Length: 412
Image (cartoon, rainbow, N blue to C red; front, top):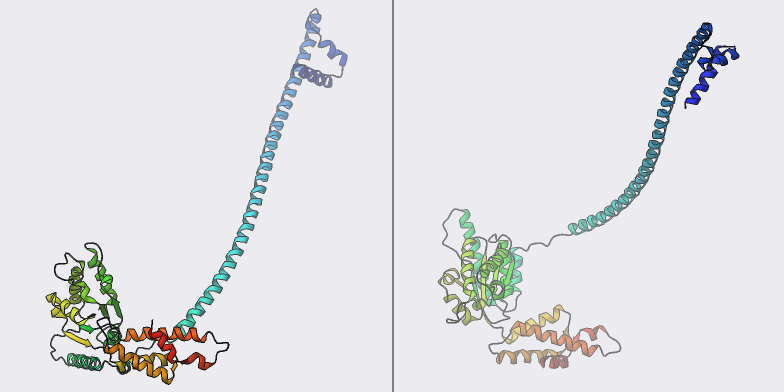
């Protein structure tokens, strides 16, 4: 570095002093010229020139260094700018990629929205179609009474129901006129053997009470002991409450209710808990709940007498008598007609004799209309086996029932 600086000084002095030989002589070791004062003065002049040249060179070097620093800074800034530009380009590429994905997702969203709209349109159309269908028409009192009259037999029950409905209607009219009415309990006891129409009459009654405004809904909820009694202490009351709540506004029909009150000495039984819960709930909801208990005659008498609360709340008794042989045949004929089966003369005669025989020799297990239904279903099965063996099938083949069909069905 020092040699370079000396070289630059020498070159600059030569430019200042045209006498190259003088300069070279002046730059020789000073000891060669001390003999002469003039030579010494010349040496001093040369030194001043060298000093001026050095200052000028130093100034230019400083300026060059500053420019070099500035250029270096600019270069660094350029490098950083280039790096930032590269990053910006990379980010732009990523942004473009994300934008492409966003566009793709937007397209999928649009497609899904279109499908959802299509489904919604279909569902709306379906619902609109369903809603456009007329709701089931509630039957009037007259229509329900006609439905009751269509039932086979049960003449005494029909008269009891009509008298009860008339009584309730007049009672409501007296209420409207602010006339006093005696206390009324509409809870009922249905007594009789299975298959005598107890559930069917209860269903018609629930709709009749709804039609005259005694009940708000008119539904019929059917349960037995298993629907009210639980297997653990404290659970029976909860289960009974749930069932009663489901029947509010209608009729709670308890079949074989006597099973809730087992014989004395049978130990702790949760049926008693169900009875106590039921009595309380009947009182709490006496304005919008009717309870009908049903079962065999002798068993129901024991059930009612097992608890004073039951005796005070159930004071209307309906006795359902067994169907006689002609009524059983009428029920059978109705089933055949509804399903478009036709009995030939021999089959009709056999059916009459069959129902007369089962009625005359009935016992405690006599099923009444249940037996008729079972007998009819057996006949349909035998008829199908017989007709299926034919190579061709006419309308008569599919509808005519013969005596042999009934004979085989009676053996089931």
